[in-house]
Length: 305
Image 1: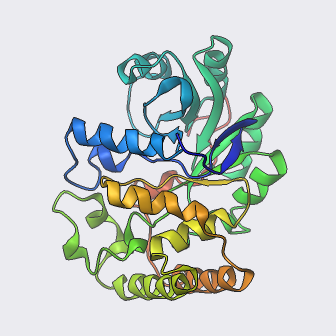
Image 2: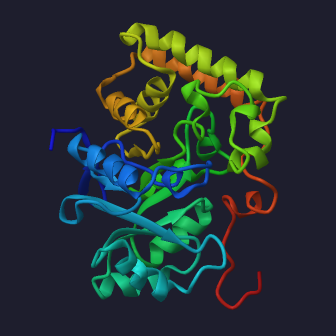
C-alpha cells in the first residue's frame, strides 16, 4: 500500500481523501457488478485511501457507516447488521438522532467513534455533551457552502469542539467533474433528476464553475476540475476530509491524485469566488421532504416533534 497524506478523526489517522460508496449503491443509476465494485475498493486501498463508507481490508481501513435517515431498522439492528458488511466492529458510526443509544455501542466495543450527519450547530453541542463526537458528515464542496454560513454556524462549532468534517458529495454529486452537460446526461433512475439544483435552468451556472475550475487547473499541470475542487476542500483546513465516490477506476485514481495538489492562496481565492457566485444562484440541493431534515435541531427529550 502506498503512502498517502493523512488527517485525524477521533485522534486516529485516516487518509486525507476517503471513498464514498453511495454511487456503487445505485443512487445515480447503473453500478458495476460485485467484481467491479471490489476492484474499486481494492484499488482505493492499494493507493493508500483507507477511509471507506463500507468494507474492505478490515484491519487496515477506517470504516464509517450510517443509520437513521429513513425508517430503517432500530439502531441495534443497524450495528449488529455490520455482520452483513463482513466486519466485527465499525470505526465511525453516523446517525441523525439518539447519541445516548449510540454511546452504548461504544461501551460494547461495537463502535469506536460517533459521528453525526447534517445536524444543526445546537444539536452538535447537545450531542457532544452526551458523548464526544468525532466527526460530522455534511455536503461540502465549491458547489455547496452551507456549512460555512454564519447563520448555520456548523463549521464554526465543529472547529470549536475539535470535530472533524467529513465532506460528502465533494464533487457536487459529480457535476464539478465536467462529465455532465445537461440533465439529459443523467440516467432515468438517477437521483439527481429529482433535485432542483441540477435542473436545466441552473446548468449554465454549473458549467460556469466547471470552466473556472478547469482554468485554475491549468496552473497545476492540467489538473481536472474535480481535482481542483478536492484540492480546494483540502485547503480549507486539516479537519476537512472529502469522501468522493465513483464507479470507475479512472476517476478513482483522478480523485486520489488531488491529494498531491496544493493550491496557491490566489487560486484558492479564485475557486472561492466561483463557489460564492454559483451558491448565490442555484436551487435546493435535495428534494422537498429530505431538505427539511438538513441542519435542523433534534427535539429535546420529552418533547413531541
